[in-house]
Length: 389
Ligand SMILES: CC(=O)SCCNC(=O)CCNC(=O)[C@H](O)C(C)(C)COP(=O)(O)OP(=O)(O)OC[C@H]1O[C@@H](n2cnc3c(N)ncnc32)[C@H](O)[C@@H]1OP(=O)(O)O
Ligand SMILES: O=C(O)CCC(=O)C(=O)O
Image (cartoon, rainbow, N blue to C red):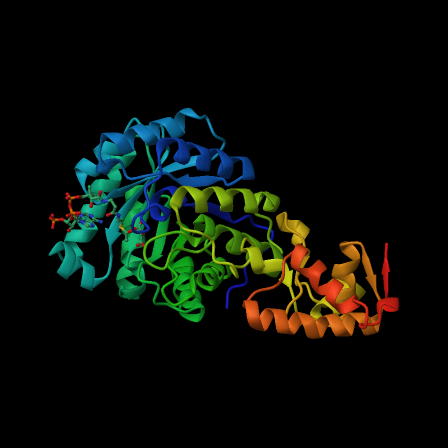
């Protein structure tokens, strides 16, 4: 098993503006595209895939506008394995091109109506064309997960000979698991000097794990999208991949983790795809606690119930009271509202809380909590146990 060199730096190639926008029904306005590009650049994302020039003049204009921002990030454009597509990519200000080549027999036969020899010859021709147009070339291996591994080795060899610098391994349908990704990327790593970029989809909920497995097997570049936005079930989320690399493997990506909430909010708003409440890192619930034992543990020492400090990603712990609250949580939350409760008053409040949540199917807000506290401490309900502060 090849061991990843944790001193090397993995390059994030974020494709929110290409595969992210391919999410059904999503269309960024020019202003939204520019704002997302600026924000990703400010976070230190080193590469961005910013669009598909073959789509037409409006798309090309938006790519020119992103390039005109003069960002630090290198810009990539996406192209089919077709002369006209590559031609459309020229002169827009992007330095990198991803030329997408379907590499599985399924796609070759049943999508393009072609065969393997045709593909190898076409790869050579189109990479030469893109190099002549001044591009650094990534050959995109569409449906690489279903491609024959020996043929894939041939594809990489052909691409390298033609002047490509990178091969993108696309798990187009999101069908691999991390062990299979590791094996395939390690095999290609051993066979080729090309940069290797992993492009994962989340159809089986494996996108982040597969992307990290690729990094461990020697991939040099990883595709991400903010919030995991993307085709069907989406792509590997930027925030998860970066945190996984940094926290699990100790690899620095150079990306400002504290900027995740801001860019997540911007992309959720621009795409009209809200972030699920429980979504890791950027979801509202990711650092929200109700369970009594957890809140008691967090009060005693944060490391009891945190895998990493939420401040690292610009977040903080939030305590809510509900069905699963314990007395320590009740005392802590009420103290924040200026009400000191004895343990026995807190116990009675827990009973009121449970009744409230069973009725309302949600946690009480601040005003409702104060009413519950009043009920708990009302005459006949041991008022001596409450000390307003
Ligand atoms: C897995 C991925 O994410 S790949 C990226 C997919 N992204 C998109 O499709 C979004 C943008 N797409 C578009 O705007 C349009 O599909 C366009 C402009 C690219 C093409 O539109 P059209 O010319 O109307 O073709 P249409 O989309 O109907 O069909 C796709 C054509 O591209 C061909 N094609 C598909 N992939 C490739 C490829 N990698 N290389 C060469 N040809 C390809 C198909 O075989 C088909 O060709 P055919 O007409 O000879 O059968
Ligand atoms: O560049 C490529 O070929 C990959 C395209 C893609 O988005 C995918 O296969 O999921």
